[in-house]
Length: 329
Ligand code: SAM
Image (cartoon, rainbow, N blue to C red; front, side, top):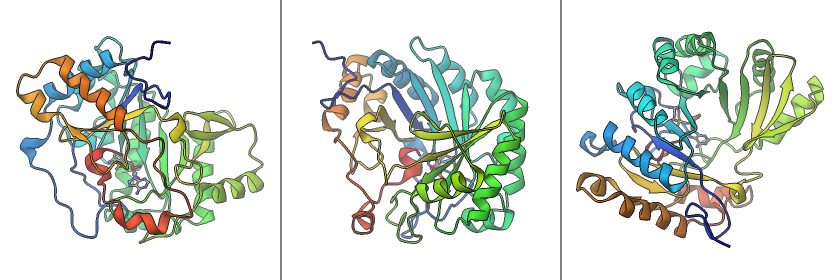
């Protein structure tokens, strides 16, 4: 049997590239900002628009069909609209999405739609302005809400991602469910991952099944289905509520993702301790074939799983120093 070049030795076909457009962000969520201080990369090391578009063209040849721009905060990039437009035009790229904190979305939603963006995920950990402030170190709650409604106004049906922190009260889970019942959004609770060495030490880990069981019992949720890695329950005619469990029920066996950091390093996994940098290759006229070979090499070294579970989380967490905003969340 002929193995496709984007398939690894565990039989996983890789069709999804996540690209961090910048490691800069306008929020400082405590679980995303390392205790030991944040050293941002040099601006000169960040990939430029042409380098990103060329990498996607090579990735499409490799078999990638879905792109997600993330960060840092991807809307910090003034050239995001032209990046999206150019990437959408690449043969083989079927879907382009972004993950954003929504702070700047009110002013950019229309241009993102016009550029051809297919979908967006918006991160929002609380519907309470004060709690939002505590988590993010910012009072931009109302900007995010305006951004969500601006996106809906443009015809998007955003996914709202909520990190399940142990301080998330069940009353807050109720509020998110109500929000998703009356607006065309899918709210998804995601388990906290141990990144930046403190993801699970400053706050306790909560399996999302705790929230799921509570909401199912209280609100009689029924008929869940899988949407990618999320288990999703429909809510009336408008929204939905979902649960993503990368730690308690990892989905590594179905992983189809490769990641490109904002400085041009390719990773097979968010938890890889090292990746392979292609920035210098993009800058010294290396041919497409050679760069594509690096995609292949990343898959050669990709492990079968991240190896984390609830029992080893506390021990393993301190050794994982990966910066999610550089690699891209
Ligand atoms: N700035 C954008 C945003 O806020 O959506 C994109 C980058 S952010 C790193 C992407 C997502 O990763 C956010 O939803 C954030 O909550 C999530 N995230 C960051 N650190 C995390 C962690 N340790 N565990 C789980 N999710 C995390």
